[in-house]
Length: 275
Length: 281
Picture (cartoon, rainbow over the protein chains, first blue to last red):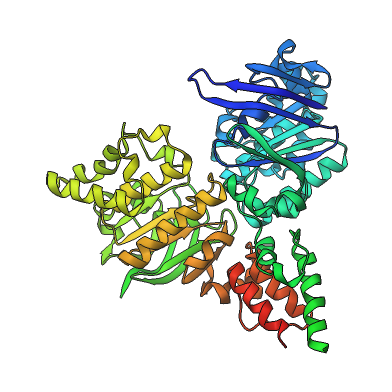
């Protein structure tokens, strides 16, 4: 469990990135953190593995105050996959990259080689095992960054903007993958402004703006709140936008799913036609 | 009048065994707004590199066929010359901006062209105005938000008065409202200045309404080209795994139930309107 209590964080240059954030994330939850560019989303998740420590307030991971633990200890529990995978990759080969974290955590050689195999397969990177990470495409590099974190099997996985630069098929795969991780009782936290992706995943949504949490709840409630969404520089999903324009027709206003939309509209149009 | 003409283009990167682009034929007319999309690795970015001669001049490799931009065969003209006709805006504006003020960044390309001081000043004013960042002229680019930075990158390119602007996933890092703002600015350059736009994009929901043509690439080839309403409603687009805008998906799903909306909608406004019409039956 992650407990964030009234956290303030100010960067050395004086920018106050978090201003009194209180959030609790239970084990096994699937949460997305959304908000405008510069809202403090990345700053917040960097507190989860101790990369940043609060200027004021406290962050607890599994009951441990992050100020009392090293990044290495916390990383074992909380795996963070960065937005720009180039900041994360540095090894000569793809398999070296995946093995690096495992070695640092002190796994023995047979376990390391087993886990590396597992991660290569899981993320479809087997054919690149001897390639340099920098020869991979942007999408492949993102998968590698994810593979090298999943290899040590953290129970909490944080993905910062995983859909950037990914095509639709890759997003579908990513969604299936997240669902699978979540089904295996892992906590998944995704930072994103990809509204359509979130609408398809239906997680709990935490909205941030100017360093504060401004809304927190299930996706169908948060994503369909037009005023709050636009205030944080987001737009509701297209399906929701259609329903908002039909609000005088007595249709439900909390629709984010396209199949649900189709059923409702289809039934309504058929009824109108039979009259 | 065509501004880009590509004939039988096949291109293989240096050291690569298979071609990345295969037998591409394409004509883009002046003033078009084209969205170029397709699965990762389909060759979109490689294709764009041919428009300002980075291919073959910088990347080398083997280029067969012809690419003519603004009447210049890219094979015979250096990138520095082609850059006056084709401007590029990339995914991450931080890689493109370097000066200490917005104004200086926008002026940089012009100074290198050796233009007169007055002309430089005039064009900088104009580019800042068109991209709506006049108020940011004294700011340092690194202090700006991602959306503002991207508008500075567009202004720098615009100041060169190119005939074509290529934008390679310019809004990936931006939140939806900032992205929308970028598309609106780009659309204005297209409609008011008749600049030809080539937008490489996965994020189609927000961009599609501005385009008059969508080109889908797959495996180094162009597999679809036409109006967004036709292309995204085609079975081929669906099977290629391109992200179909949700308005069009809804149109298709309703059709499966025997409900025919009057045409293929590409905005929520159009969709809502069509549903109202269907209800009046």
